[in-house]
Image 1 (tube, one colour):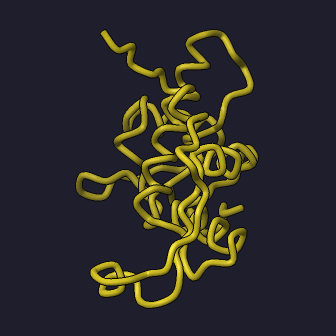
Image 2 (cartoon, rainbow, N blue to C red):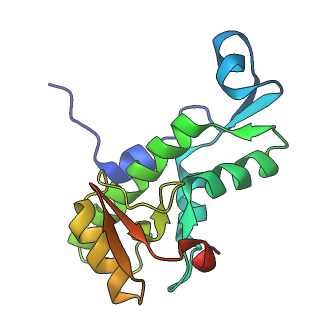
Length: 154
C-alpha cells in the first residue's frame, strides 16, 4: 500500500519546478504570446507567508510576482491557484500539530476580492480569521468579499 503524502510533503515536493515555458498552441488563445512561469509550490507559499497582518494579496498578484521573478510574460494561473490551496492545507496541518508561525493563507484572496471556499476552514473560517484582523466582509450572492480589499493589498 502506498502512503499518501501529507500537505506539508506536497508543499515541499517541487516536481522539477520552477520552470518557464513558451506559450504555444491552445494556451496562446487564452494567455496570448510570450512565456509562462510555473512556480514551485514553496515559492507560492513564501509569497503568501510574507503578507503581514492587516494586509491582503490576490492570486493575480502572486502570479505577477512569479512572472517578474522568472522574467516571464505571466505566472501560471492554474499552478499558482493549486499551490496556494496546498499551502493553505499545509498551514492548517501545521497549526493542528501545534505550530504557531504558519502561512497566513486566509490573507490570500481570489482576484475579485472574494474569499476562497476551497481553503481548509471554508468561507466561514476564512471570514472569521479576516474579521479578527480588522477586515470587513460582506456577502454578495454566494460570495463573501472583503470591503475595499484593494486598499489592503500589500
